[in-house]
Length: 308
Length: 182
Image (cartoon, rainbow over all chains, first blue to last red; front, top):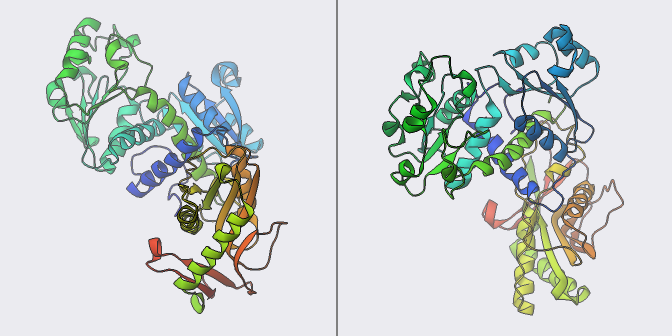
C-alpha cells in the first residue's frame, strides 16, 4: 500500500506504482489547500530540516509551506549563514543535526549525489530538493500532477522540454519520471546545450524545435541561465529567443489544447514571451500551487509509520 | 478471515436506513440549514442513500458530502502500513447547519474523534449528530451515536464488515472472525 522507497533521491528507478501513489495522494492534499483552513494535523510534532546549501527561494518556500500545512515544525538551514562558511564538512553538519533528533531532511546541494551521501549519515528519510545537475524530483512530480490535472491521464501524451537541457536537473527528473509513466518526452535545445550522451536518458533529443513541437500536448520551457552567457554555449540572447523562445506566432501553430509550463523563474521575453506566459494556455501558476500539494504528499508518505 | 454470521441482508439494511431517515427528520425540523456527510469508505454510500430517502420524502435536493479522515488519525506515526488518503468533498457551507455524520460501524470511537477534528477545519456547524449502521462495543473515547441501525455484542477478535453494492456487488452486513495472520 505504501511507497516502496524510503527516501526520494530522484525519479530514476522509481516505479510507476510509487509515482502514481504520490500523485494520487497529492490530489487529496490539493483539496486541503482549497479549504477555509488549509491545515491538517498529520505531521504534528515532527521536525523537518530544510538543508539548503544552494540558493533557492521558491522551492524552499514551497517545502516550508507544505511542512506547515501538515503541522510539522520546519527548521531552516542555509549554508551562507552557517558553519559551512567556517569549513565544516557535510558529514559533520549532518551528525550534529542527527544529534538534534530530526525526523526528516529536505536537502538542496550544488554537488550531484549529496542527498545519496546523506542517507548514509542519518536514519531520517531524505528528500532531494535539487542536487547539482542530477535531479529535482519534486519539481518533476508537480509537473506531472499539473499535466494530469488538465488531461486526466499521463500515458501517451507528448511533452516537449525546450531550453538548456544540459544544465537542467528539472529536465532530467522529468525525463526519468515521464518515461516511467508512459509519456513521450522530447528534449530540445541548441546543440551546445544538449547532453553529450542523450541515449543514457532513454528519450528523444533534438536541436530542431519544429520537430520537438510537432503533435506535442505539453511544452515546457526552461530558464536560460543568463549567467552562462559568455561561456560560449550560445551565441546571443536574441538568436536564442528567435530559435528556441516561445512567442505568440509559434504558439498559433500549436494544437488548441496544448499547455505551457515553466519551472520558474521566467526570463520574460527570452524563453517565453510575456503575453504567452500569461495566456490561458499557461499553467505556470498551477504548477506553483501543485508544488505545495506534491511536497505535502511526499512528506506524508515518507514520514508515516514506525519504519517511516 | 472468515464470515461467520450474516447480520443484515439488503432488505434489513434498507429498512434500518429508512428508520434512521425518519428519526433524522423528526429531530431536524429546519432542513434549510441541514447537511449530511458520509465517512470514507462505506459511510459515503450509506450517507448517499439516506440523502436520497430524505429527498424523496421531503422534495429536497441534498447531496451527501464525503469526508476522509486519514490525515487526522492519531495512529499515523504508529501504523506499520501507510494508509491511503482518499478524497474529501463537502460541496456545501457547513457553518451554522445541523449536520449528520454517517459511518458504517462505531467501534473505538477514534475515527469519529478524527472526523470531528476534520469538520472543525471546514467550519462550525450548529450541531453534529452521528448515524451508524452498527454499534459494537469497546469504545475507547466518550462518543455515542444518535442514530443506530443495530447494536451487537462482539468479541475483540471479531469484526463487523459491511458490503455495499457499489463496491462489493451486494448489500450485506457480516460478523467476521479474524484468524492468525489476518
